[in-house]
Image 1 (cartoon, rainbow, N blue to C red):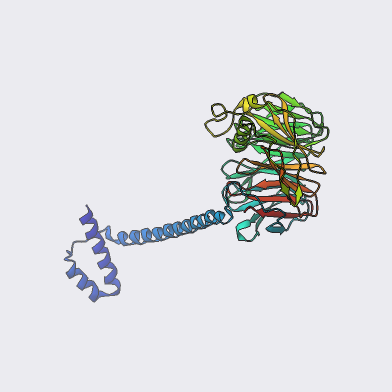
Image 2 (spheres, helix red, strand yellow):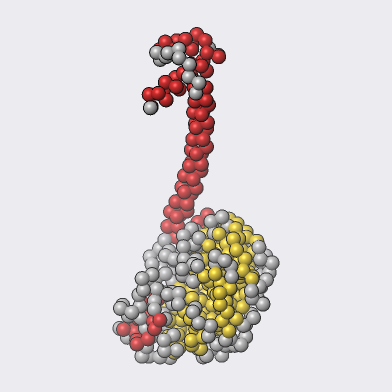
Length: 446
């Protein structure tokens, strides 16, 4: 069959040459030992072969473009190692920000690192989201528009393929973080949407609003699956536990509520803050391990005073001394996805009462009160090592606390306005903070 196809192609070439180069056609005829028997199908063979060549050229071009795109991604991933430092590294005492990035026309309300790429995203009162490449000297990569009022929060799914944003325009938007485009708009709240978080599976997200409710959304359809009612005032903040079964909310009613995704009513209510709760954040697994080990060895509140920004810190108040029963153990704290289960949840909260608190959810008990800020505590995040928790405040500072001792080990200054949000890059420590002065600051850990 292959020999017959080859002979047909030889005849097609000879016919092509006969029209243009008769002498060459005769020489080719003799050299190829072709017969004079006509082949009706020979005329189309050469045309088909040329078309096949053109298709292959197009495919080669597409593959070359894909190769270039993947090479660029590899360079971005390799670039992330520029900021790599020891896992427990912190900025030097009194260190100024490594970068100060400007571009927003309104105060920055939220900041988040991309889980994979060397990108940091900021949300702002100017109704935009900006994307910065911190490996390229803070170059502004993209400005995302779509919301019509202040963007109040943003959050990535586990793999970084998508992120969600929420706004005072009462909407939630789902974005493709590769193509930087909006792929879904969700509406259903009756007032400002102040917080949004993905469930670890990435299939659903939870939002909170000034309409006193929280809502669970299906990311595929954009439909509201469940509404949670219980707070009596503006719900300011929401966070989801590592296992994806529970979530917590903080409100203007001064209370924290802990909910199950599968039930419409709160499981627990934590009431010791005496002002608006601005932020709640579940402790990740590395922090839980640090807390468990500290209690197991009786190390809490025994560390000597340390220097934070040139000022000797004082320890925070430990309210509960016997907490080991409520803290995770090696046998009970781990699930298949590296999360934590029911009775081992530890929650941090920040309030306008100028304190940050650490709670044992299973015991509904406040374990620590972290003190030191002189104004509202607005944001909380965790160091990759698990040893430190960071808080930002309207006192224009960021405090870094040792979760074992309760001491403030660093204080980062420099903002000219209230510091509204803070984030830490995992696994390479890099701290970012946004403020109402419209500037994003980044500190390298050394």
